[in-house]
Image (cartoon, rainbow, N blue to C red):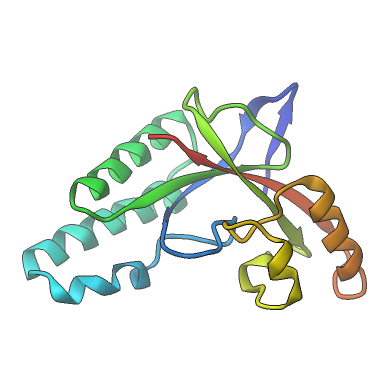
Length: 168
């Protein structure tokens, strides 16, 4: 993931824009066309606006460098989605706890588990689901460590990724 921090000061982190209508809000969540499934009940002009905004979101989260300038553009884009009654969030991720995202207030959602470069919590439908929080994430590091103990036979490498929602 290429993330690191010293003394809780963010050196590098990743961010993404996500629809807020699913249970899982971790690293493997992204804004997808399925988030716009309700658009088939809207006008063609409005559909064109959303597709244009969605393509800008893809550019800002995938093609362009993740930095303060592009982060602010993504925040503005998220607010534009809100003005059109499409509610989404911006999530930030790091391997260590952080206190803000480029100076913006953040809200802790939980801890995702990276296992062999995959995010198995994104597909969790079994018994572990009862110990995950309402965002489909581990509520604390102790819970995350307990889960990885259970997964030792399936995966070799683990990292814990702290997930936050940006307060807009």
